[in-house]
Structures are given as C-alpha cells and as structure tokens.
Image (cartoon, rainbow, N blue to C red):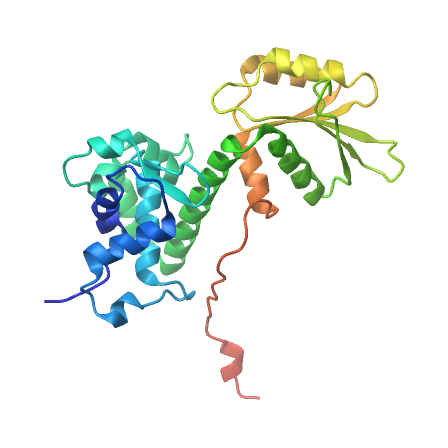
Length: 296
C-alpha cells in the first residue's frame, strides 16, 4: 500500500472533525491534533518532508485545507491565530469534497474578480494547457488573493482607532510624509493630517471608516468636506467597505480633490507596500545560462 501526504482537500473532513466540539484553538494546535488523529501512522520521513521553502509539507497542506474551509464558510478565525468551526461546518454531516467547495459562491471570489467568472470546466482546461510558468503565476495569484481576503477580514475586526493608525502608516509608507493624529474627541471627521512638506504648507486630510457591511454614503463625504474648513483642498477617505453611488458622485463633483479608497483598493495598497503583511518565503526560478556554454 502506497503511503503519501494527504492532498490539501483531503484534510477538509479531519479539520472539521477536530473542530466539531466548537472549541477555539490555535492553528498550530489544530494541525497537531489533525496529524495525531489521522496521519500519525505515516512514516517519520513523510511527516518531516518539507516544501522547497523549508515548511513542513503536511502542515502546509492542512493550512491550505483550513483556508478553503474558511472561504467556504465552514470555519472562521475568531481571533488572531485561532480557528473555530461555524454553524455551517457543524451542519455538514456528509463528507466534504473539493468539488463541493468549488461550487460555493463565496469560494469563487477567492479565485476571481467579480467580472472575471469562468466555469469550472474552463478552469480545468486552462490548467491542462498551462505551462509550468503559468501554473506558478496562477499559484501566486491564489496565494495573494487569500492573503488579501484575510487582511481585509482582519481590518474589519480591529479597533476603529487602530484602523485609523493603520491607514496613516500606509500613507506614510507610500511616501506622503509625516502624519499627525487628530484628537479622538471632537475631531470633526478628520482622523489624521499629512504634511506634504516640512513646513506643513500643503496638507492632506484623512478620514478612515472601519465598516463591516455598511457603505460610505453621500452624507459621510459631505461631512468630511465640511470638516476640512478651507485649510486644505486635498482629502483621502478610506473605508474597509464600499462607497455608494451618492458618495462617489459627491467626491467627484466636489471643489476639493477627494480620493476614495475602498476595502479592496486598501488591501491592494497594503500588500504592495508591505503594511500588515510580511514576506514569508522567497522562491528562486533558474534557467539555463546559454552564454556559459559559448566558447570564448
């Protein structure tokens, strides 16, 4: 009988079983329990096998299984580093397959933008015709999408005041100068001020709204413009959610220059400028050096 490390989708049901008591446990503890209960019979050399970047392979497979279950709504992350089963996960009585998760609407968003939906069969065809480089690129795209989704979830759960600080740190990392945090009481809708020059002659006013579901509305933009009080004509309004049409029109037609950053754009920028994320692994892809074999 051939023994091998489970594929990531083969860890779905072991993970759900381990979490079925509804306990909140750390991811590392969950991985440990899954291995002890379901895979401890595997040879030591398999359990210690590593990815090319040095991560334990079976832990990597379980981590990806966890990510897919989270995107399907079967588990959630109640706090940093911890995992817990959801009501949907508890109600899943039959064995869960990769095909089941691929049919989840929420999981389709994990792979593709809203205007780039493709059928499962076309995805299979694309993979079968892909070059190794295409597969690498696709894999990186999936990892990046997962990280951004996790980052947005985290932003929606942190303290609103700390969210304001995150936004200011991002803008500073982007090169917009030092920032001044405004008083939390009576700040008039201004959460921070960025001085574009050393003397503070040019200012950018910042408003940061940490919303879970509510959209930013026209009234919010109007209040923001009013709070700028003629001191500047530049403003950046950032939210973890979306702007409704009224808010977009108000910002577009204002005499001020108002930049709107929604949740998706925010995590794109944080990912690009390494704010709230860190480089975990670096892969080297080598190619043949033709010049080396040319006789001099």
